[in-house]
Image (cartoon, rainbow, N blue to C red; front, side):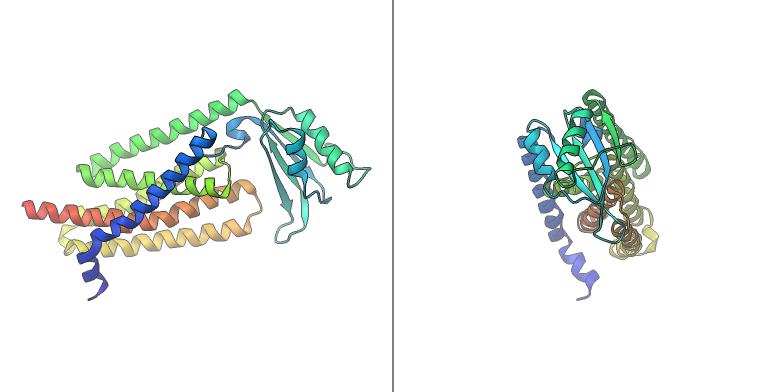
Length: 299
């Protein structure tokens, strides 16, 4: 039996795979929410706090532990900057919530001076950016509103285009799944969501809808091009080519880039696109086959 024949017979069984993954991801997010009160960790751009960048090649491997010990009430994140393509340290980026910049600067300077006594933070090797907690919370709420509006308008456009509840709902549901998976992975890996990460999640909606609309159009509007399985596999070939070429470019960008912001965007897109392959071709495609056959049976 060829793959088309096997799929035509067993496509409903494939529904289980994306659903199990989705349930696991929702469980991870729910667990994070129960522990922290947030469905995903937020950085200072969405939570409020101070970010300082220090240019120095002086290694301080225990910087995070030192700052956490000095400021137990503050949430501290320390990232080491390295020279492109090497492990040579070029500095630190330190994020801390509920902490004044001057206090953090003094503590960082004192810790580095334990390694090199004559070290001093100046405008040449130090920069800082502070976001108020109310402003960060406002950014966060606005970004969530943007995502909800994106889903709402997407649902309206899809429903007008296909004029059928089940396929339209499936497209929106697949876009939701594509956002849930990277959020769960961020919680597992301890990656904090920033304004750039929100932009990446919005981009995922576009990627998801693109492939879902492609196969939905093939299934519902190209009925003169053969049976539904043939039309579906034609759409799958095109969709997989689009997704795989995007993945190759994004993965290359992730490893080449030295910017944390760009890496966060690319990592979210990688997680989302990988799960999009599963949810689009195991769930959405199968539902379209079932729906098309059901309509034909009723006729």
